[in-house]
Image (spheres, rainbow, N blue to C red):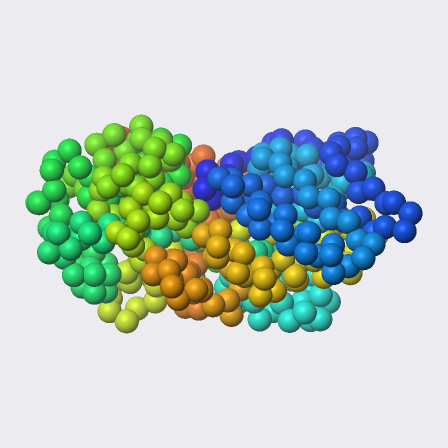
Length: 447
């Protein structure tokens, strides 16, 4: 669940996997005599996302590698994920492709041996320095695809994507609120919300949230849970590591805090009918003081609010505590087990993720390089805040990943249950129980 991309695709995906041995789909990884052609599938072309970056980097790679041709193919997320297993199996598909973290997609690609472990390339190019251990775990699988977060490295990713607490700097100042106090602790944030509610027009929300599709409430609820100290437990829960439970007092407290914000009138009155596309547009027009949303809408926020655009990491529950957020990297890049050029594929991945040129182009596109050593341009205060929050949460192992990675049906479960809670049809404890029930049923199938 990221930027509207995360869908529960397990039925379509497994069906495609079952047909993998008989149907050839998609772009051909053509081999011209005297030429090495790498065909690459990507869904990073939203608004326009990384598409111009990938195109330019591929041109650069071709120029520095005579005889190499890069065939970039952009698809929408659903089309790529549902067709790539058959294409990889047939040998007529991509040499490199993006996948999708979690049990609904990457586990199936690993299990079917359609993608290769990248450990030897990680050693050669020092990829193990790119991410914190908690972040790198999202690319690790056992060879049978049953154990997530451990085992060999099967993917690497280009950008960081996390839920940010956007805010309107000008409005915060007008309301007499201090940035330092507001973002020091969760209590400070809630105090600022109370002050804003008393001073803003009743028709204006304090916290923008568009939950029509069921994405934004999970972003906010699970980010609050991370602020309360649940980040490591949530990751273990997603990985099915040990016997974690999300049906606990801390998670219920996080859901209760979100519910209280709705009851106090901090959220839009039509929160469950306001779309994931309309909410950032409204916030960019100056409606609302705060907004929990992914870094993928940073361009919209900056274009609308200009110098008033601010971005912060969600405050910890106590001063000096770790910062946490829903987030991970962008989709993982995988190398096909049937490519004729695995070494060349790894070299391309290393270039498009860690080269100085790649880092510069990503920042120009308002995208955050995922690797820890990337330095942001100092001339852009908003971008520095955005990057700073990513690095802080990453370094403090506060990235919780996405709850829907935990089972093939969790996206629907968490979305529907939080919509019901915000609609006054259920209570926080009911939501926690529903999520754990979904998790437990799937967990038993992994034994």
